[in-house]
Length: 281
Length: 311
Image 1 (tube, each protein chain N blue to C red):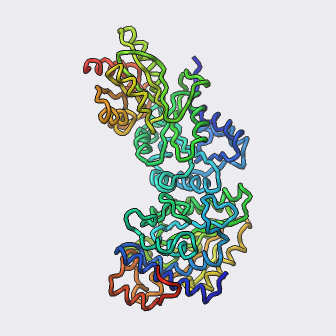
Image 2 (cartoon, rainbow over the protein chains, first blue to last red):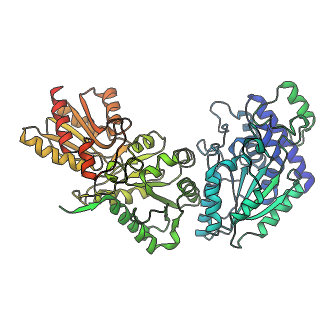
Image 3 (tube, chains in turn orange, yellow):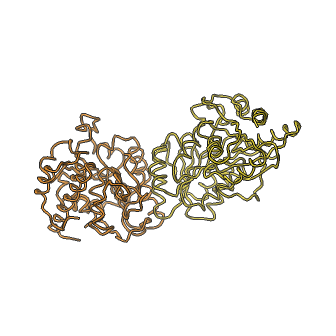
């Protein structure tokens, strides 16, 4: 339960981690990672009731699934900064023999990861399955998931949305990273989602919307609001408006940093905008 | 000889499991009757999950259910259990190494009149290529029931393949069913016949015809295609010096393909493969289709004659 000032310091350090990890091997996805830094920081340092001594089954603890696995840098940084594994391991990201694969996986036994994701559209189904098991186990804790907005173009997502409301899966809070951009450009140019909120409502979900998804206090507030809405017969979705590349001025307002690493000079500028707070890995 | 469908072996095995182990869950994609899952559903309404016609979602939900100790069994036709959802299985189940049992009925041409859209002949190949995946194709009701019960004990993903038609129930419920261990069902000296699924019975029929030709057959019932029981195969081949494989599946990627790899690596031996040769199926009765696509005792006899001539 860190205060907002502390959480902002963590978020700044996480942004540095993301930039340095992606730069170090000239590959990875900084844009979406930076855009979700505040969400991850709020979730792991404030919202989740979780056990850093990782256990796959996660009995009696809140469980989080990252469905848009390509934003692994922010996930890894936050897991390490929480204490799931050593911060120094972040330097192995995307390198040979690393547990920090390009996309998150259970395959290498990295603490904190419960499912492999990367091929999009699969995480919501998994989260629903996990939520069902929690109910069967009379486990009162919650399941959280995060999805890219572009990812919603995958059909499986809509199968899962339909299933969750039809079966009253009400112990799940699924957040959509609504930055309105994907690799090839603006979502509205690639394949429009239309009125997302109305679509989710018509699929039987309770829908919250937060327009300042890069403000930690707002993220915490909306997640707490969502928590209060659980166990009432309906699944809960949060449309979280974020800015891809948030925190680095030249990465914001464009889709171009979705999957491109900064060069040496760009890294220097980006890090100057995000001064070290907790110590680099 | 009692005639029974293998899918009922699955259904009855699942029901028995449901009584013994409260962690067993079952999911079905709108084919509960076809998969014979109604008894489990009626006995365990809280542990049965109807997901509708949404197989991709079913695979993902099953993967998630394992987190917290449940053992989900998914049920739908073999085609919709594999090719339709290959990426979901690959990423959420196989790569994630989740304890999901993918149970697939109506495999092969014996699905019959529905035709090629539903007659998957590539599933063994697809599933055996996935790391972590066990692939099992039992031959009759009893063996399917035993396999269903056995896979619950194995920790990790399993693909269990069975069929639609009623076929002779010739194995015993007392047989020693062990994942990865083939079962010798006939001793002979002239040829080794390695068969899986419905073609095991056809091999037994073939061996009787071969006996009239003074050819004696070693028959191996190889219910587990992955991991393959190399020992039982090699020991037999050392004696017979030639092999025929038989399966209701595409030759490319099937049991014959696995055996061919083994022989090439360890004990080069003449091999003939009975299976579907790079073509789709079609509508017809199961027996008509087995005949037309060369998947019966007659085809096995011809393959044996050919392979013996190559010794």
